[in-house]
Amino acid sequence: MDEGRRNFFRRAAGKAAEHVVEEADARLEARASRWIRPPWARPELEFMLACSRCEACIQACPHKVLFPLPARYGADVAQTPALDVLDGGCHLCEDWPCVKACEPAALRLPEAKEATGAGEAVAQPFPKLAHAAINTAECLPYQGPECGACEGSCPVPGALLWDGTRPRIDMTACSGCGLCRAACIADPPAVMISSLYRKEAL
Image (cartoon, rainbow, N blue to C red; front, side, top):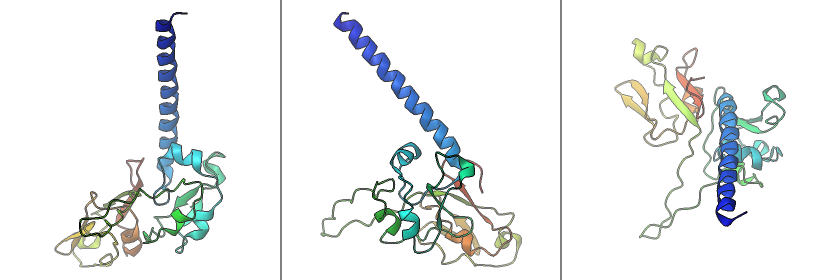
């Protein structure tokens, strides 16, 4: 076989392998729309390949908002960690104990940014966990009465903003931690949380 044909088949094999990976990634992401991973989780395919199901991250969470996925979601994802933002919320701990506990690096902090000219380290950004939105049909201030129950609940500067007495979420800043939902006194809560892989809110 001449070199030109060899190169053609190498390229074809490479494209086929790339297509298989893309298909697997798309299938995993579609399934991952049913849960929310812990902070600094790798993209779903990389996460699944790295996670050893040791539950070290679950045990390290000081707020007990991580849990192992049950077997009903499938044997391949059972016992992998997920984040409870419907009944709790991620506190975005400064020292990221869940991430530090992850030896296989399925959870992995981004590389530290270079120090500023003044010699001070740039602050660690917040991870993007989920999408959050306010359901104005349930949010009390949008119906008339003042509330403010969620005021002060957000740990991310500029994410929970106010138009008078009405809260709104800036998704460019919001991490989707769910703490504003946890603070909401409306029934059902007026803050809707959805997976990064899902359009519909939970």
